[in-house]
Amino acid sequence: MTVVMTRADWIRLALVAGALVSLEAACRAGFVSKDAVIPPTVMLQGAWRALHAEETRGDLFYTLHTVGLSLVLSLAAGAAIGALLHSLPRLRRVLDPLLASYYAVPTFVFYPLFIVLFGLNRWPLVAIGFLFAVVAVAINTLDGLSRIPRAYRRTAAVMRLSPAQSLIHVILPAASPWFFTGAKFAVAYSFIGVIAGEFVVSGAGMGHAIAFAYNSFDNRMMYGLIVLLFVVVGGINTALWSIERRLYARLAGR
Image (cartoon, rainbow, N blue to C red):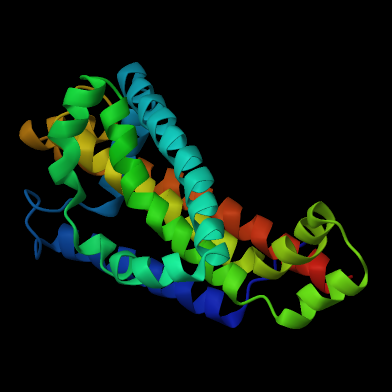
């Protein structure tokens, strides 16, 4: 499928490019202190230098591995929780206020507990990323299942589809927009939880590398690492967006 840029896409791209050009000009003209923010071109130079450093590549792979574990666990557990709440309306009514206020709880207060439970390794970070992402997946799964029109389920029953056939041909296609939304939230929240944890206490990972560069007053490396993270996370979300559009196009062509 060929991706066609819409007018909104071009406007969004122009706004981002304009902001970068303005920041570059402000930094070069001295309106912004170089001790606070460096020009975007220098950030790119820092990202290129960081990418060619073996230590940085090791930190990046460490973070991606940790995020991948928390993402897989949160998608599986969140989908199961959402399906369970959909099948138990009374339990859903009980837990609705808790789900609505979940992100008001400072999840990092559990980090010392996770260190005691799992030790000083990647698993406390996986647990933090999991706690950040799992509820977003559960809520979107629950919304997706709740918004499937009853006519779809009745049609599946009339056609005598088995539960597996109904799941594949009716439920998943109808609820896929919410599933993909939950997956995109899970990617963002997993990265937030893992990198924030690495920033505070970890001895490895991109968060640790950014914190080390910050404490060493190495702005070029610090902003370069941040640019690398933007590229990685943006690339993952763009891939999900592309898969989502392909799926919608296939469903519309049926």
